Image 1 (tube, rainbow, N blue to C red):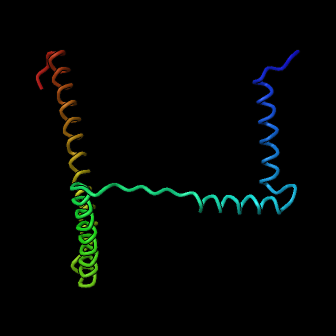
Image 2 (cartoon, rainbow, N blue to C red):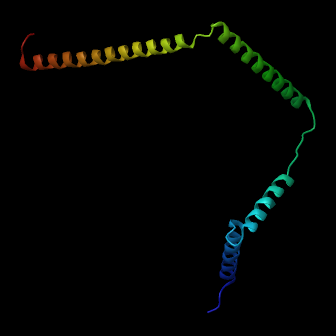
Image 3 (cartoon, rainbow, N blue to C red):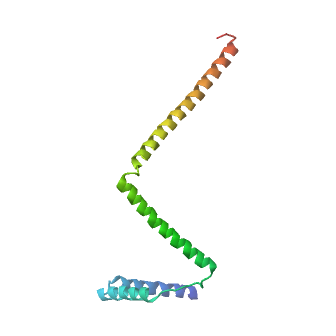
Length: 136
């Protein structure tokens, strides 16, 4: 039985991968692991990419907006620091407000459910009274 080219390539690539893994893992020698690591670091530092776009109106507007945004972020951070130092920022009151609003919302939901339940009970009593001919 003759092996196809696919099987030959598959076996060769599996054997090559196994040998590479033995070399990289350092099973054969710790020097091979160190050599592999140093080679990866060298390639990572040597390979790079640089891309640029010619300046145009949109690039300049975008750069100006980015500069303004970073300036506003710096101002906002300074303002936040000043508010915290003077005590104007009151996050505790915001927590209380959230708690109070959630309690009110829960109470309203309970009242709505209670209203529907009582309406359902009253409607069932009316139909029961009408079916028996009794006056309530």
